[in-house]
Length: 66
View 1 (spheres, rainbow, N blue to C red):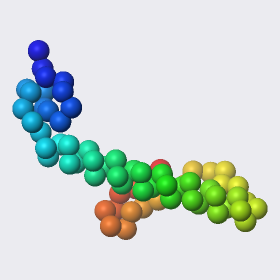
View 2: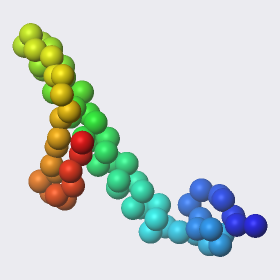
View 3: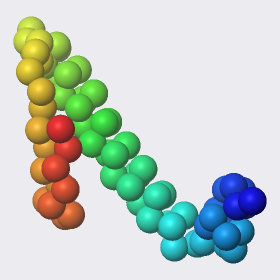
View 4: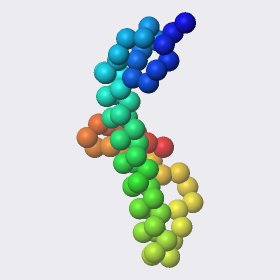
């Protein structure tokens, strides 16, 4: 049966590369999420409401957040 411990691959061996990659992805997604919250706050403070989807492109990575 495969080892399902955190930070290990299905064969049970430690997998630090996957852990770093997942951590980087989570960090990038958190950045985008925080930006959307700030944009909604600023729009609300200015008397506006964001009603459609916000699409962001990360200038560093080129990743698109929808």
